[in-house]
Image 1 (tube, rainbow, N blue to C red):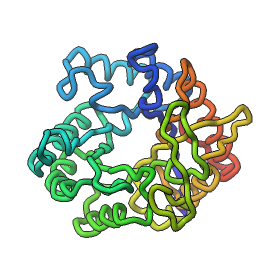
Image 2 (tube, rainbow, N blue to C red; image 1 turned 135 degrees about the horizontal axis):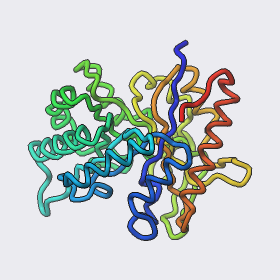
Image 3 (tube, rainbow, N blue to C red; image 1 turned 90 degrees about the vertical axis):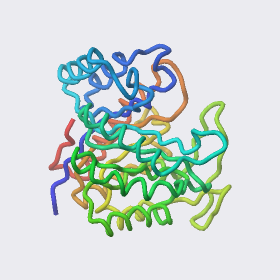
Image 4 (cartoon, rainbow, N blue to C red; image 1 turned 30 degrees about the horizontal axis):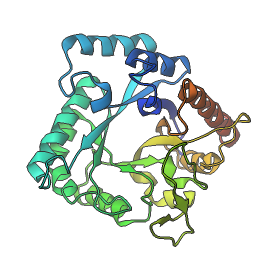
Length: 304
């Protein structure tokens, strides 16, 4: 079995309630480094000043800060807004232009992965049909830049779905190494977390259909592991005993370890808002993951 190399990072989406309110970009990035994380995931439109054309001053500060703190850019979040234009759908050419813009920005900033978020056409998040021809057209550029395009498998999508089947079919048909799956661990939640003031949702059984979302067993991950390139370690709440009552971390991490999967676990906090809450919860999650990995693979240490 291949020895896994699991690395801990953070998505700055975790600080959504505080970014540009109580925390600057510098504050968020400093906090990521202080907790011992080494991977940095950001959202292009939210976190890059003057997106998609940052100034040389901003770029110099970006590289200098990451170098000083020992941080590695992991995944750039991209938004391909298929409903951008009132009264009409986005064309393939327009989708290609957006993807190419974000691929070049990802490369410029040192990111290895690009997560495109596209408009959806079904309640289980099937992407707009424009995704396929647009993605095929940017694979050559992705290869030239060595950036991997990885759409997110995000609740209420399921792993055993047309969405995932179509993504894998593209990989198999083209043989590309620059397209893969990003797994958001929120798809495996075993109980709902309702953020204060948020929209209430319910889980059903494994055969449920909207408005009840099926429970996705972690075992479904087994068949797609060869295609998984990045993990957004979504979570909602970790208690004082370092227990997560929503995401089955031991089961999930056991699959990664057993498959010898190597890559980034990019923490994404999506629980209740509050000053300092994301920072505290992220530290709890990293402690939980480290302890779980000590149990699962005591001879290995998770890479900071």
